[in-house]
Length: 66
Image 1 (spheres, rainbow, N blue to C red):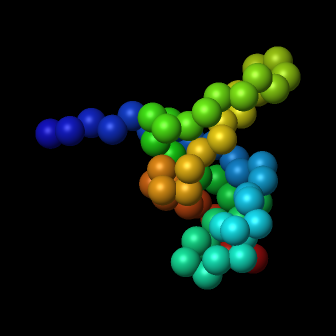
Image 2 (image 1 turned 180 degrees about the vertical axis):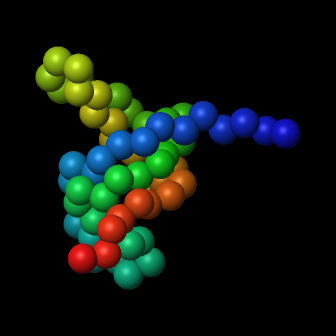
Image 3 (image 1 turned 90 degrees about the horizontal axis):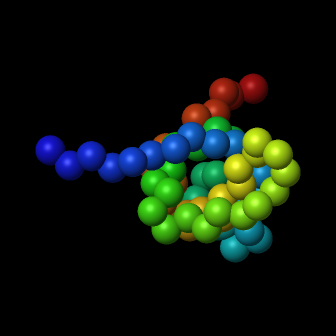
């Protein structure tokens, strides 16, 4: 049994390449589950933690259909 550490977070921004690619259905404000292994932490403000996450490390996307 292999355990992969994962974190959840909200997408703040998506690069233009990913936003325009139909293969990546990720959008700004989506809630995601991601593997933080290759993520780059960025100091932001207070208790908020911001990560730059490679698209391949996004494990799941949680979105309510409008």
